Image (cartoon, rainbow, N blue to C red; front, side, top):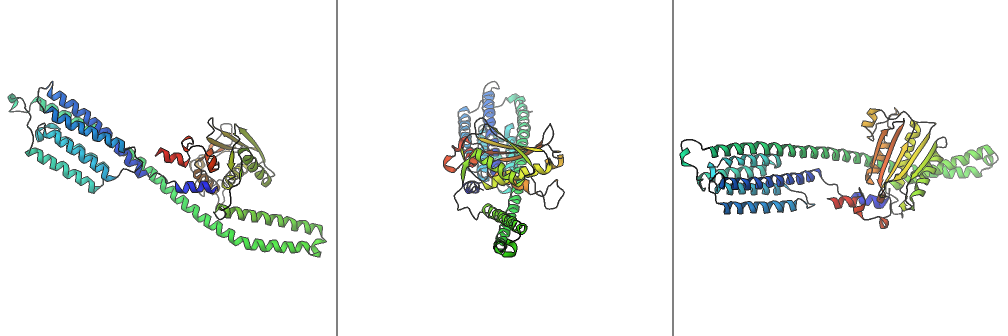
Amino acid sequence: MNPELAADALTEPAAAPESRAGRKNLRQLIEMRALAVAGQLATVLAVDGPLLIPLPKFEMLTLLAALALFNLLCLWRSRWPRPVSQAELCVGLLVDVAALTGQLYFSGGSDNPFIYLYVLQVAVASVLLRPGALWIVVVSAVAGFLALTQWHRPLALDPQFSGSLPPNYVGGLLLCFVLNVVLLSVFIVRISRNLRQRDAELAEAQQRAAEEVHIVRMGLLASGAAHELGTPLATISVILGDWAHMAPFAAEPELREEIEEMQQQILRCKAIVSGILMSAGEMRGEAPRLTTLSAFIDGVAEHWRERRRAAELCVERQGLPELQVVSDSALQQVIGNLLDNAAEAAPGTCLRLVVQCDDDESQLSLAVLDDGPGFEPAMLARFATPYQSSKGQPGRGLGLFLSANVARTLGGRLEARNREEGGAAVTLTLPLASLMPRQSRPHASTVPGSPAAHRRGR
C-alpha cells in the first residue's frame, strides 16, 4: 500500500461515537432552552397584559435576556471540534435550574403553577447525565423548590377567589402540565434516537477493531511465512542453476526446458514473497513508483491477463483524466482479487472492467461485471465479512474481506449487487486524491472522503 496514504490513515483519528452523541445532546438542550426563553417571554407578557396580574417585568426580562445570551454561547460552543463533556452538560442544566428559580422568585415562588417545570429539568438530566452529575441537578432543583417556599415575591391574584383556586391559577397548572408532557416526549424521543445511533456506531467501531486485529494477525503470519520461505527458495534456485550446467541435464532438451520452467516459477515465488513483505511494511522506505491513471489500469489488466490466460477481460474507460497517480500494490491486488472472483463465478465468459470518474473528477469508480449466476441474498447480506465464501471450501472468503478493508483505508468503499440483466457487479469507489502523490493532491476540502476533508468537517 502507498506509504503516504497509510500514514494519513494512521494519523487521522476517527470521531468517537460518544463525542458525536454529546454534541447532538448539547444541541437538543440549546433547542429546548430557546423554546423555554420564547415560552417564558410570551407568558410574562400575557400574564402582565391580558390577565392583569402585575409582574416585575424588568427583572424577569433581564433574566430572560441573560438566559438567551447563555444559549448563544452554548450554540457557539457546539461548533467546536472538542467533544462535549458531562461537566458542560451539567453546567448547562444548572444554569437552566437557576434561571427557572429566578423567574419563579419574581412570580409567586412555590405558589406559581410553573413550579413543576423543575420535574422537566430533572427528567432531562436523568437522560443526559451520569449518576454523579444527575444528583447535582436533583439537589439543585430540590434546593430551589424549598427556597421558593420561603423567599419569593407573591402574585397579586384576585381576592374574590380566596376560597378556591382562581381560574388563572388553574389555567397555569394546565399549561404547565401540557408543556411538561410535550417537551418531555419530544426531548426523550430525540435523545433516545441519538443514543441508539451512538450504540450502532459503537458496535460498528468494535466490529472494525476486531477486523483490524484479525488483519494484523494475518499480516504477521504472512510476513513470517515470507521470511521463512525466502531461504528455501534461494536454495532451490541455486540448485536449479547448478543442474542447468550439469552435463546429464544439458544433454536432454526436455529436462533443460523443465529446469527453465522451474526457475521461472521460483522467480515468480520470489516476486510474491517480495510483494508480501512490501505490503507488510518492510519495503516502505523505497520511493513510490509513479504512473498515469490510464497506464495503471492497463498494467493491472495486463498483469491479470498473464495470470489468467484462459479468461477474457474487456476494459472500458469513461472520462478518465490524464493525471499522475501512485502505483499502489495493495490496490492492484484488490482489483486482481475482484477479477479472480468474477472469473471463478462466470468461467468461459468475457469479464468487463468499467473504469470511470464522476463529473468533478474527484471520485474514481472501478466496476467488475460478470455474466454468472450472481450473489445469493444471504451472501449480499454478509458481503465482505471474513470466511463467507460461495466456493464451499474451508478457509476461503478472506479476499473480499481484505479488499473492503483496503478500500476503506484509502477512503473508499466496496459494494456488490446483482445486475438486472443477469450476473453480478462489484464496484470499488475511491477518492482520486487517495491515489495521487502528496504534492499533487488538490485541496482537502474539494476531495470528499479524504482524511483531510474529514478533519475539516469536524
